[in-house]
Length: 277
Image (cartoon, rainbow, N blue to C red):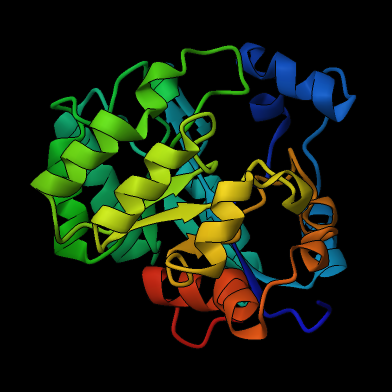
């Protein structure tokens, strides 16, 4: 996997401010780190990608009720520094609808970002809440995906907003034109997430926050059969380094066509990345 074709559908280039958030204490324990004193260099993120043959990373901004945790400008600067390696994913102030729309407009029209990410547990709100719907409509207008978190939360925050049914299912019914990428597989509601992705043409799953040896068996079966065009690789780096995320992929014995769609083909299509990677 050293040909740098792989596209990572969910990753971050973190800052010390981001990594030191109280709600990430459980993740810091898993990563065996304490508080961070200095911002990690961008070269560390590039090295992690190179180690696993990841050519392009979709870098996520994060915005919670207290404000930006990873700002859109932080992501923009990384994209500008390495335009052949990164694409930007916007975050917005969900609870300020007009400001949120203005922020998304800036990110798409000025910064060239390719998606919007809303992490529901940061807000303790399901994606059927009224705050989300103007943004979903805007994503349809801009022809960009919205990326949501599905499944339980590793951080010390409520998990209920990440349920695929009824929430993602309802959104897909209300916005059939909207491309929705459910990140983090959906465990322990993996079967729900697979059902929603099967039901709706524009709903997809990314594998972020799970290394290949931890993919649920039902997801692997879906990937090999009806989900060939529905599952995208994601790492959630730096929480899981790229090398660790992909180390056991050969053990899944994916046919070449399925592996290539999973690693880069599906992401190119869903995010409209053109010649990326």
